Length: 186
Figure (cartoon, rainbow, N blue to C red):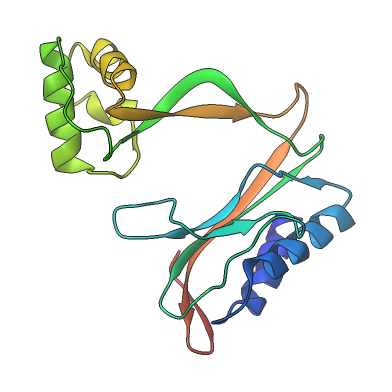
């Protein structure tokens, strides 16, 4: 269902198309396979140093839309669930990103200061996995991340879950909106 919807949506991409139309196509195809699109998730614009840009590509036709413009990059993400089509945050987080709006905050731990410097230098505002830090830092990662999250310097991305026993499929590609359609980037 997700692959069929992805292929159909790509054929609709061009400048001036409303992402709500794409969301309606996603919803129609996914529901046609007797699955539910996940209403809290969807595609999005990708901007320089910002994975989740301003413009959204909804999973449902009833959700708001944005106009795609030539030269913009989008992640087309399609989700199909055997459940209700609704996800929630779990208590687990392994992916983080720097909060560029947090300003200066006092940090007590040396590990926190070192982690912050490393993240600033290597990832800037892009998401990163906690395990990616293991080669650089042997100890103090968990405490450093905890303090940075508590101080608002890092934003945690929690693992998402549907209801227990439910299956979720995802298909994703990155495209560039071109003059007469799209160029596939991934």
